[in-house]
Image 1 (cartoon, one colour):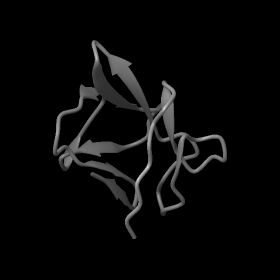
Image 2 (cartoon, one colour):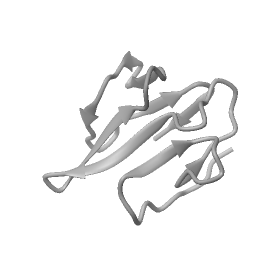
Image 3 (spheres, rainbow, N blue to C red):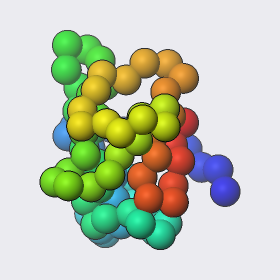
Amino acid sequence: STRTCVAEQFPFAIGRASGSGLRISAPGVWDCHAILEVRDSRFFVQPHGDALLLLNDQPCKGALLKMGDQLSLGGARLT
């Protein structure tokens, strides 16, 4: 299913925990799977701990995001 989420406060947590800014209950998603921050007026994403995060189908330990990037966290895909 498709839904839209607006991040208003940073850092912005993505995961299955109830306190996450974006709550995702897909298989393989950790309680706190990834963190979205603002750095130099751009969005930066990094996995939390040892969580597997894919950016455009490649493993990601942290990266500045650009228009069109796709993130995969467990069974969820964010565009």
